[in-house]
Amino acid sequence: MSAAAPPGLPAKMHALVRAFLAEPGAVHAAVAQFGAPAHLVFPQVFAENLERLRVELAARVAGFRICYAHKVNQSRAFVEVAQAAGVGIDVASAAELDSALGSGFAPGRIEVTGPKGEGLLARLVGSGVTINVDNVWELERIAALAGPGVRVPVLVRVSGFAGTPVSRFGVPVARLEAVVKVLVAERERIEFRGFAFHLDSGEPAERVRAVESCLMLTEQAYAAGLTPSVLDIGGGFRQVFTADAAAFDAYVHALRESLLGRGEPMTWGGNTFGFHLEDGAVHGTPVFHKYANIVDARTMLADLLDTGLEAHGGRTIARIAAENLLDIWLEPGKALVDHAGITVARVEFVKETADGSTLVNLDLSRDTVTPADQEVMVDPILVPAGMNPGADDGAVGVFLAGRLCLERDLITNHKVWLPRCPAPGDLIVFPNTGAYHMDLSAARASMHSVPPKLAVVQRSGTFTVCRDVDYRHEGA
Ligand SMILES: *Cc1c(COP(=O)(O)O)cnc(C)c1O
Picture 1 (tube, rainbow, N blue to C red):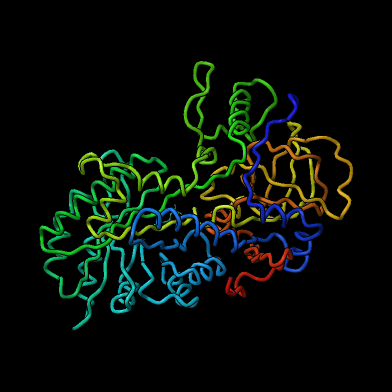
Picture 2: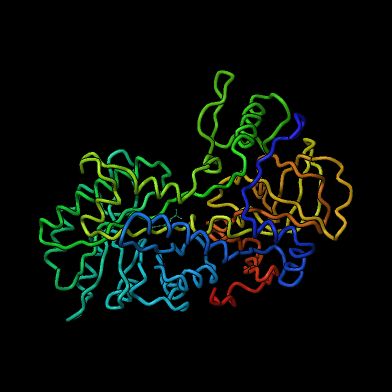
């Protein structure tokens, strides 16, 4: 990179995805056949991510279960791969349950998390799935709904750990006594498997404290005559978006400078991304901080299992679990789909605005590629139309604009440098959109239809693309 190189946010990408994008005409052919914009998923990358976590677990604990958190992506291909790999699945709605059953998951390998109403509970009781209970009401309803001879396997989700932000989910640690009472009273109808937690936080210390609390609760449950055999540590294992941490830091530095009026403007419409300006300085943590992460999920998981706990004579979490015959369950979502999805959009036109900014207008909207409207801090990739990319007339800083007739439909509120100014018909690829980005809020505004989802597979060096709903896993 020369000193004059523009600020950039290079994306970490899987070699398979890179090869697909580099294959002449491949991306253009896929959207010509199935339509643009489109979401593409790469089941082989998912399978690799799964295997990585499995290896870390197998090296440390005898009993474990990975439950793929389906809500991260609606893809059929990912569910098929998880099923074929023999792992579990974590579903959070009736439709996700149907999806898991449809791909061949036996009820014994299905866990249901999230908020559940009466209708879903009635369906779950007696079905053989494990219910990850959110609150005392659920527990009491399960006991009431269980007919004679039915014993419902449950985990109890706990929250409200010391030093952890309040969560809307789970039973507060301080209220566990009431739960244990119900579990003991209803043991004929409820098979208590153990305690569970799930933290959004990437902060290792928070997860360690949650494990400590759950181990303490497990002891109390034993003392009350229950026989828990599972410790469910949830998901939240992080993704790595950036290929270059130093470049990321340099970009954010330039962005902060621009907020102070130094250098080239880098934000659209006065956006400050959660920074605030005071006394001529920029303060605060940006809303996009997760894109700076460089610790991958397998490392995060290994570090957690290798953490020694003082209250247990310094023994590691893995060892404590083994000695107490506790199986470790986890529910990774984003970690399994990391680098296993991209989103492709078409350039419609390019224009200049009154402030001199260049807007590249695409055929998708902001919420088709952003998770919960967060700014995505990863550079998109320009795939020019035709074989001849034309002359590179030098990098150009642009904002990407969406197709909705709304002022706020800017796909990037931060300036993005592309190798040259795009032309109508060029494609823009958003890397690593598999986790929440592509499915959490798929836009139907202005009566646009939801983009098709396609599965890309490489066999003997050849790529094939099919509709995701048509994907069926073939033996490796
Ligand atoms: C969403 C969710 C997960 C998956 O979270 P990731 O951060 O994607 O790993 C796991 N468990 C529960 C209960 C969830 O709600």
